[in-house]
Length: 152
Image (cartoon, rainbow, N blue to C red; front, side, top):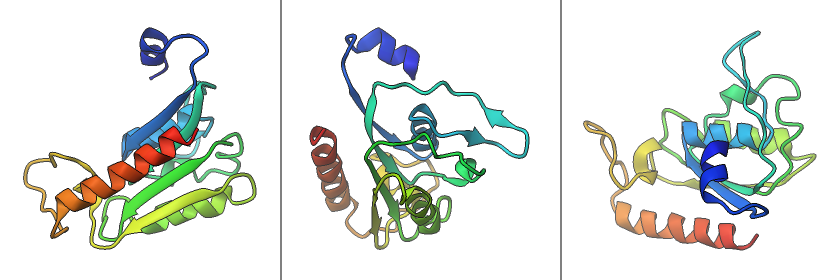
Protein backbone atom coordinates (compact mmCIF):
# COMPACT_ATOMS: atom_id res chain seq x y z
CA UNK A 1 0.00 0.00 0.00
CA UNK A 2 2.85 2.38 0.77
CA UNK A 3 4.28 1.75 -2.69
CA UNK A 4 0.92 2.68 -4.23
CA UNK A 5 0.85 5.86 -2.14
CA UNK A 6 4.40 6.63 -3.29
CA UNK A 7 3.35 6.22 -6.92
CA UNK A 8 0.01 8.07 -6.88
CA UNK A 9 -0.04 10.54 -3.99
CA UNK A 10 1.91 13.80 -4.20
CA UNK A 11 4.52 14.28 -1.45
CA UNK A 12 3.12 15.91 1.67
CA UNK A 13 -0.44 14.80 0.98
CA UNK A 14 -2.27 13.19 3.88
CA UNK A 15 -4.45 10.15 3.16
CA UNK A 16 -7.59 8.58 4.57
CA UNK A 17 -7.70 4.80 4.33
CA UNK A 18 -10.88 2.83 3.63
CA UNK A 19 -10.67 -0.95 3.70
CA UNK A 20 -12.88 -4.02 3.97
CA UNK A 21 -12.00 -7.17 5.91
CA UNK A 22 -8.31 -8.05 5.45
CA UNK A 23 -7.87 -4.67 3.73
CA UNK A 24 -9.11 -3.04 6.95
CA UNK A 25 -6.62 -5.07 9.01
CA UNK A 26 -3.81 -4.11 6.65
CA UNK A 27 -4.70 -0.43 7.03
CA UNK A 28 -4.69 -0.78 10.80
CA UNK A 29 -1.17 -2.23 10.56
CA UNK A 30 -0.13 0.56 8.20
CA UNK A 31 -1.37 3.03 10.85
CA UNK A 32 1.02 1.50 13.38
CA UNK A 33 -0.78 -1.58 14.68
CA UNK A 34 1.35 -4.67 15.20
CA UNK A 35 -0.26 -7.50 13.23
CA UNK A 36 0.29 -11.05 14.52
CA UNK A 37 -0.54 -14.39 12.88
CA UNK A 38 0.19 -16.23 16.12
CA UNK A 39 2.81 -16.45 18.87
CA UNK A 40 6.17 -15.37 17.47
CA UNK A 41 4.65 -14.70 14.03
CA UNK A 42 4.51 -10.93 13.67
CA UNK A 43 3.76 -9.51 10.23
CA UNK A 44 6.30 -6.76 9.57
CA UNK A 45 4.42 -3.85 8.05
CA UNK A 46 6.15 -0.49 8.22
CA UNK A 47 3.76 2.23 9.44
CA UNK A 48 2.99 5.01 6.97
CA UNK A 49 2.57 8.43 8.57
CA UNK A 50 0.56 9.76 5.64
CA UNK A 51 -2.58 8.09 6.98
CA UNK A 52 -4.75 10.56 8.89
CA UNK A 53 -7.91 8.52 9.47
CA UNK A 54 -9.29 5.03 8.81
CA UNK A 55 -12.71 3.73 7.82
CA UNK A 56 -12.63 0.01 8.60
CA UNK A 57 -15.42 -2.16 7.21
CA UNK A 58 -15.86 -5.57 8.86
CA UNK A 59 -12.34 -5.46 10.34
CA UNK A 60 -10.80 -8.72 11.57
CA UNK A 61 -9.20 -7.60 14.84
CA UNK A 62 -7.85 -10.94 16.05
CA UNK A 63 -4.52 -10.05 14.41
CA UNK A 64 -4.02 -7.23 16.95
CA UNK A 65 -4.76 -8.91 20.27
CA UNK A 66 -1.14 -9.23 21.41
CA UNK A 67 -0.28 -6.98 24.37
CA UNK A 68 0.44 -3.44 23.16
CA UNK A 69 -0.31 -4.22 19.52
CA UNK A 70 -2.41 -1.08 19.06
CA UNK A 71 -0.47 1.39 21.23
CA UNK A 72 0.98 3.28 18.23
CA UNK A 73 -2.40 3.71 16.47
CA UNK A 74 -3.52 7.27 17.20
CA UNK A 75 -5.85 8.43 14.45
CA UNK A 76 -9.62 8.72 14.08
CA UNK A 77 -11.32 5.45 13.18
CA UNK A 78 -14.79 4.67 11.89
CA UNK A 79 -15.40 0.92 12.23
CA UNK A 80 -18.51 -0.55 10.63
CA UNK A 81 -19.76 -4.12 10.89
CA UNK A 82 -22.94 -6.07 10.25
CA UNK A 83 -24.87 -7.76 13.05
CA UNK A 84 -25.01 -10.96 10.98
CA UNK A 85 -21.31 -11.05 10.11
CA UNK A 86 -20.12 -14.58 10.88
CA UNK A 87 -16.57 -13.92 9.64
CA UNK A 88 -15.76 -10.78 11.64
CA UNK A 89 -18.61 -10.55 14.16
CA UNK A 90 -19.48 -7.28 15.93
CA UNK A 91 -17.62 -8.46 19.06
CA UNK A 92 -14.33 -7.97 17.15
CA UNK A 93 -15.17 -4.37 16.32
CA UNK A 94 -16.32 -3.70 19.88
CA UNK A 95 -13.02 -5.17 21.09
CA UNK A 96 -11.13 -2.70 18.90
CA UNK A 97 -13.01 0.24 20.41
CA UNK A 98 -12.40 -1.05 23.94
CA UNK A 99 -8.70 -1.72 23.27
CA UNK A 100 -8.18 1.84 22.02
CA UNK A 101 -10.49 3.77 24.38
CA UNK A 102 -7.62 5.25 26.43
CA UNK A 103 -5.90 6.73 23.36
CA UNK A 104 -8.47 7.18 20.62
CA UNK A 105 -12.22 7.00 20.22
CA UNK A 106 -13.40 4.48 17.65
CA UNK A 107 -16.79 5.30 16.14
CA UNK A 108 -18.45 1.87 15.96
CA UNK A 109 -21.45 1.36 13.69
CA UNK A 110 -23.33 -1.94 13.66
CA UNK A 111 -25.92 -2.40 10.93
CA UNK A 112 -28.72 -4.73 11.91
CA UNK A 113 -29.11 -7.58 9.45
CA UNK A 114 -25.93 -6.89 7.47
CA UNK A 115 -23.39 -9.63 6.80
CA UNK A 116 -19.68 -9.67 6.02
CA UNK A 117 -20.14 -9.16 2.28
CA UNK A 118 -22.94 -6.59 2.56
CA UNK A 119 -20.29 -3.87 2.16
CA UNK A 120 -19.38 -5.11 -1.32
CA UNK A 121 -21.16 -4.02 -4.50
CA UNK A 122 -20.56 -7.46 -5.96
CA UNK A 123 -20.37 -10.18 -3.31
CA UNK A 124 -18.43 -13.40 -3.88
CA UNK A 125 -20.20 -16.18 -5.79
CA UNK A 126 -22.43 -18.43 -3.71
CA UNK A 127 -22.81 -15.90 -0.89
CA UNK A 128 -26.27 -14.94 0.29
CA UNK A 129 -27.14 -11.33 1.07
CA UNK A 130 -29.06 -11.03 4.35
CA UNK A 131 -30.15 -7.39 3.88
CA UNK A 132 -33.59 -6.88 2.33
CA UNK A 133 -32.50 -3.55 0.74
CA UNK A 134 -28.78 -3.76 0.09
CA UNK A 135 -28.77 -0.77 -2.26
CA UNK A 136 -30.13 1.49 0.49
CA UNK A 137 -27.43 0.20 2.84
CA UNK A 138 -24.69 0.78 0.25
CA UNK A 139 -25.89 4.37 -0.19
CA UNK A 140 -26.07 4.94 3.57
CA UNK A 141 -22.69 3.55 4.56
CA UNK A 142 -20.82 5.03 1.58
CA UNK A 143 -22.31 8.45 2.34
CA UNK A 144 -21.24 8.18 5.98
CA UNK A 145 -17.74 7.00 5.03
CA UNK A 146 -17.41 9.97 2.64
CA UNK A 147 -18.43 12.39 5.40
CA UNK A 148 -15.88 10.80 7.74
CA UNK A 149 -13.09 10.93 5.15
CA UNK A 150 -13.61 14.58 4.18
CA UNK A 151 -13.82 15.67 7.84
CA UNK A 152 -10.02 15.40 7.96
